[in-house]
Amino acid sequence: MTSTALALAYGAAEPAISPSRLPRPQAEGGFDERLSSAPLRRVEAREHLWCEGDQRTHVYRVETGAVCIYKVLPDGRRHVVDFAFAGDLIGLGLTSEHAFNAQALVATRIKGLTVSAFNQALREDSRLALKLYEALSQELDAARAQLLMVSKRVSTERVASFLLTLSDRAQKRGADPSVIGLPMRRVDIADFLGLTIETVSRTFTKLKTSRVISLLPGNQVRIVDRARLEDLAAGDADGDA
Amino acid sequence: MTSTALALAYGAAEPAISPSRLPRPQAEGGFDERLSSAPLRRVEAREHLWCEGDQRTHVYRVETGAVCIYKVLPDGRRHVVDFAFAGDLIGLGLTSEHAFNAQALVATRIKGLTVSAFNQALREDSRLALKLYEALSQELDAARAQLLMVSKRVSTERVASFLLTLSDRAQKRGADPSVIGLPMRRVDIADFLGLTIETVSRTFTKLKTSRVISLLPGNQVRIVDRARLEDLAAGDADGDA
DNA sequence: CGGAAAATTGAAGTCGGTCAATAAGCGTGG
DNA sequence: CCACGCTTATTGACCGACTTCAATTTTCCG
Image 1 (cartoon, each protein chain N blue to C red):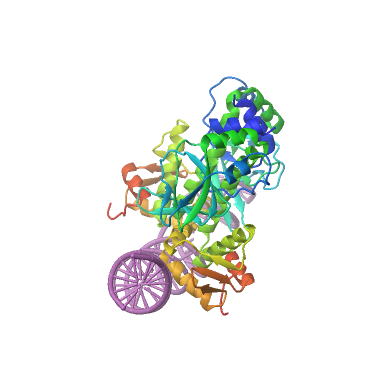
Image 2 (image 1 turned 90 degrees about the horizontal axis):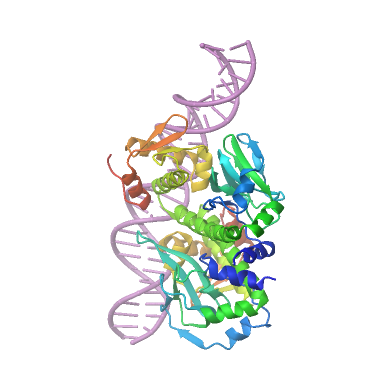
């Protein structure tokens, strides 16, 4: 019942979906199998998967690594839209051209279907269309959530929210939610949160000093006091340890 | 070819569309006629059309007046999502309940279809479904644009962008783009731009003093120097008059 | 080990928020 | 029609947080 619906809509309209966290379809009809058997593409750190304006040829799933989705504004500022990790689909969208840049943050492996193969899967996997539509609405929710994040006053709130979001996403991937890998650089976080790298750095230091997090080697963060981190994300003033 | 597509998708998924600026369908099949012949509902200033969580019973088109779409956050802050003016559709959405509050800013007249009548029109007007889908993608674009707006550093940029947006929308409605009515209060603008009413007020004063705009009686703003306003919106520093 | 990139830290300046007071609108009622 | 009172808008002063500029340290690779 939904299959034709979105397959058609898919060809017709054009919103800019891009980094989507689809709940992984349980192995079944066509999409997941196709994707799993697709050739693996290796991307080096800092390498771009595609740039804004490129033809949208593939839909990818991140297998390992991390990808930064961003856009450069006319005035030169950079706006990071989202980060994608293992399991996330990227390159979705209904336009023929990419609306954002996608850059690997670390050495990353992705598997992809061509757009035509993806459309084929869309026709055959009756649940994929619905998932795609859900992805669009998730995009919208994410954009609104991001809007609220950036509208938060103090840097501590933004950074705390950011860490908690990453932790939740790590947990959904089956990883340890209390130790977060930060494959992105400070400048990426800054451009995501609408802050400067100095402020991000200072905020990390402040969180570390107040024993809320600890910074581990290899750009990892351990959440020491999750309750407190949640308080900070919610806007509760800090104070002592 | 698109008719069934979105009619089906419509029943299936659930993103939170709400204040949408559909390009008005040229008089044709069913939607516009139905809407035009629908009963007029008059809403007084400050009156709520609906609240968050209410059942979504109607889809409305604003005939005259202005509506504020907003949400109150758990921490008490208020977030204005958008404003709707004559010609804008509001109440769209795929959820059974409203996700936002809608309040008339001034005495407002709206015409609406029940959700079932809207669905009926959706089945009969082959272009409406596509438009609905476009509306969803426009929502996403608008949310992203809003994100960029709020991420702008200085208040002058935000206010200038805001005025230009209103001007463009006024022009699309066929109104004079150089004289903008501001039916909303300062607090609405502030909650929309992520500023305080004092800052909004100061910024208006600054723009007035530097001869970029002039404030007319009746909450109207005249754009005196549009080029300069565009420079300010783009982030060019100001200086003298 | 060396060098460049990245992160941290420091100091000073700026902008917007907060608190507070004043002024301007606007509707109601005398 | 004007006066009154409440709401809304404006303006001012001060303060805190983030930015900017700059220096230093750390990290990461070759």
